[in-house]
Length: 553
Image 1 (tube, rainbow, N blue to C red):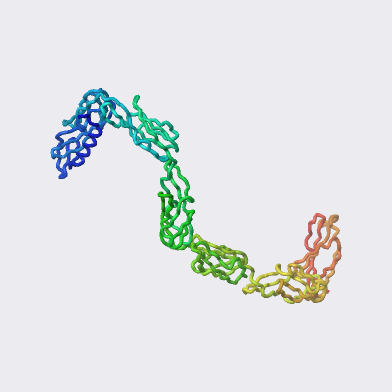
Image 2: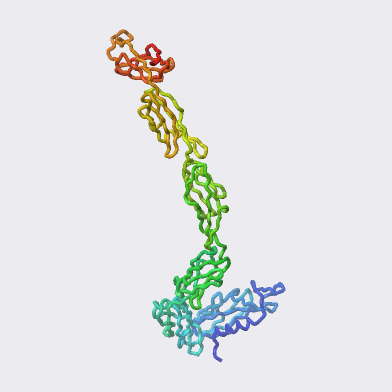
């Protein structure tokens, strides 16, 4: 009978053992049965039994332990392996035996004092040829193919020598091959894959086709979108060569539930109604998908009306907020938004959108719901002027004197304001009296004039009576000496002080270096009190002269 292949015997033995019922586990030479009692290791058998292989062949030996309870276990990794003649055969700690040279060696597996062995024969068979399988495969770019090298020996046996041969590719730009025989397709084309052991070789051709589509991913993954909105999906294709491409416009898009969402040929999905649908991108037999959840329509924008109104101070204005939703519908949401004014000193706004103008200026009125907001500008104009009153009413002023008038405006909001400097002043008879832009009238000559304060459409007035001006003529002796009796050589001039109360002088006039002067523009019948001072060329002033009193004529 011919020697059998070590691996064939090994596989057959595993199949036979697999049909048995032993399930115990050895731990340091003992096993445990299903009842939990301790079983002792009584013997070890090594398989395959007495193999015969050519030199350079490796084979896995297995140690089986038989226990006192009749069970058997694979204890290959728990025993100590030794070869009686390493020049013929070696054995690793895991039981992997390697044929070194023709001869016979005993391989023993030992656990404590129990051992078992087999005779390992290395025969004189020589390698005749090598077969590489699979033969002439076709693989897409980027994929791999595992090749196997089988050695045919002179004794007619065949052994797997995949890890003993040297692998090479005739064109590494098309396909590369590792020491283990694993080929990787690099680019479309053909290459010869060769397995060589010493002077014996075998080969096959590998044909690499263009990379094929391996999978499709759809992004974004599992989005949620509001009813009426859209979502752009992207399809990314992964190929056998590891590359990825955007295939969004090349795949076929489909929705599993078009009543919930539709999707067009470019991957744009439109949410129709709340619900869930699966969006699929397919190319031939390869497809990818994701779930889209459509939520109820959400608020997209807010419009506030009226836009940019103007309102007089004290008045009110009702604003309305209109919401546009993701499904295209609109609603009056005036009572559901939050209303605010950016400047409450100009205008306030209540929860229903009613704004009250407080003072002239501008403010921004905003309607907001969550992160959605819209605003408009409210301009508050001054309250409308209703009437103008001029005070004092109907005064009399001597010619040459002035009178300050005040204009008070009464507004439509009931308030009053001093508008003296905001209106236009006019005199009906400027030969009698004039009035400046600040409301100060100057009496020119005896007579009557109407003083008017006017806005563009509202005015008020009063009568100004100008009486003849009274005069008082003053005379004094010139100063010639200083208080110390020395001659006065630097006299600059004189100043006249006068008023309507003794010692209280609310008017002054620099009359120069004269000794007689007439005061004009005085009120007839009114007593005036007068004093004079002198000043030198350095503007140093003397004390008051004696006070005199007089009534204008």
